[in-house]
Image (cartoon, rainbow, N blue to C red):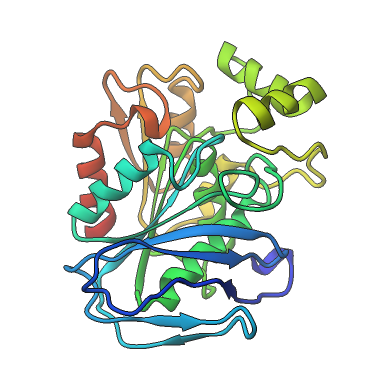
Length: 292
């Protein structure tokens, strides 16, 4: 991220990216600008990519890019305690691929097979930047991001901080995202704060939720989602939220949408984040991400 350190591209352990006509997912370990290894999965779309795009080695960290199609790559940012291989993330990836997009999924630091510890939305912007860079190295001229819950706050901050850089994005959708930090107005968020801030809670996070959490407090406090929104234009922005979200009430999406030039979808009967997104919503999201 341009404001948080020297820009570098790192990619290691790329697995056999030899033919996009072979539709099996490609896995890689990416390395962020602060040196954290991030697991990532690329699923090409026959409708969007024409031929192979990248090879790389752990020794050089370099990528060699070939010609690829002009289709959209959608980068999916999961919620807290999620991961690239969780069923809800895989379901979203399939839905977006069915709308003609190539899809990059990854696990935030401290989640899944990625290294490091979760900073609950702060340094995760560097993880998303690594995934967006990979999508562009794979030949995609157009990259859209979609984030759920914590991932929703990350895609908003990323779009604001990386505008005009190589990691810029062409469309952003935030689903079930908070508008502001330190919100404790619902029981689920009070439980989450206990998990994040207490030693016993972090043990529950590690062994019960399979999420490794950094014990250090934010310093400095990162740009809030609502303060990021005005900086995103003219990139198209979509805010999606369920009217039965138990974590963040409807003042959060309304505050986000009012802060900038954003489209707002309030989904009747929907709960929270990727687990609550049904096939019909995912299809609409895929259409929006690939066509805006």
